[in-house]
Image 1 (cartoon, helix red, strand yellow):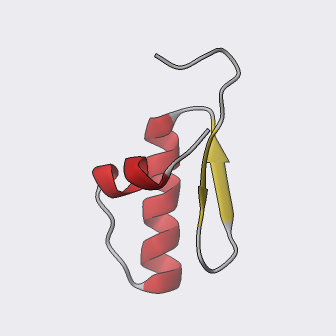
Image 2: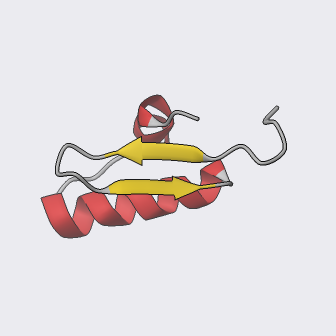
Image 3: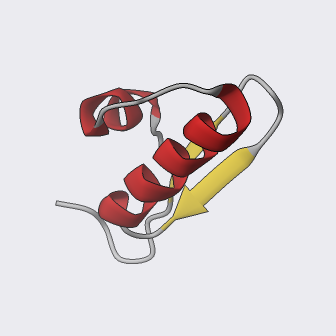
Length: 53
């Protein structure tokens, strides 16, 4: 369970920082960034493993 106001963040090696208060939204944003900018397909689990608060 997340704490109120908790923000999930993924820092891409390219320097992009993607954050959201909802993991489901973060997953979509990171997947889109990876596909458009790096021609990579990430699973939801990949994103969850990279995310920190």
